[in-house]
Length: 436
Image (tube, rainbow, N blue to C red; front, side):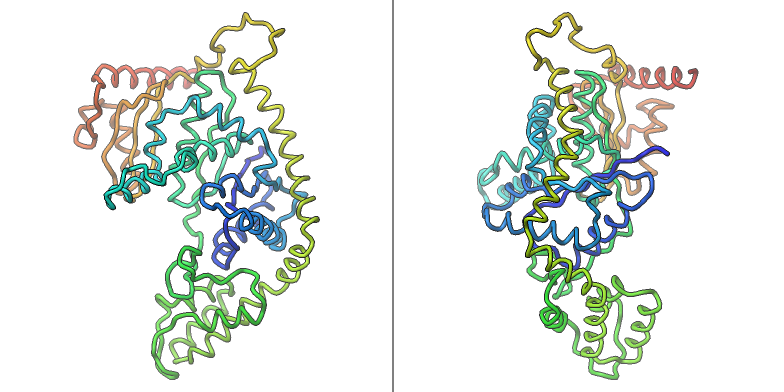
């Protein structure tokens, strides 16, 4: 059975809450037990420096997040669980990728564009308050992924762009120096649960509406008691639609239990009774983990030992790989042979144009055609569904630019002959592959 590598990073800037557990921790722990899957989980403390300048908070968050994952059932013997800053090869790879990444690519990153747009709207200089760390964030993320040759990276739709950028960086490096990197794919779970918080909005520390995952029993009951509800009195039927209380209950209950509460809503259950049901159900799930969490949080040396062991396991892969990458770019001992061709023969295999499909923040689906050097040749307008984008690509390859002219945006300094040559190269490669 072939092995698929999954990689997940957790930024160490906050305390895990129920939404993190339902949306990330619980499904990730379950996925780590899947046959044929090799899982990498890391605490992204370098990434945390971009968002947080409080060293005490970063250290505390690292401890709390590590304890939460371990208490939730992550087995460090079955996965590679490590702290990002314990892998010195990652910042070195970040620099190697920086040297093959165009600034224009980073200019299009959503986080950077959002900061620029915010500054522009406020009448400030567009880069006001923007650190180089924020600007370079996608390169560090690409290094995290490419270092361990991850095949799949579970992300939300707002993070898909970063995976596409990691693919572009890996492809650029491969083109220049030979086939070294696996090009990752985004693994999007359309069924990932998003929990509402105390005020009904998405549970997020940004809104200060969270329920910490390992609150004490008394504090958990107090927080659940403060969940916003409407003014309907006992005996009045209540709507499950839009009810934060009901949605949280559903995330922790069985289908039969959820149906029981649904009927109770229709029968006019009092809000106090519904909150008591929610408290008991959540506490039933959390209590065993809470005991393990409390034991871990008071024994940081045990967590430290676990993370260092994970880093050692991770570095058995990272150290020889970065050695190969250093040699590939010419950072070699002077006694090594110097007659190697400037570009390895394998690079010729990678020197093909490519289509890329992606989704932008507007919810539309797009595609682009880039040549072997990463130069943009074709840029589509937005489609409502990925299937429509795929169909347009097929027509473009089959019939040429004229067939989809109304679905393309203008691209400066690109001749029709450039596009035709790229399409011909792809067709020739496909024919050659089919004949082997």
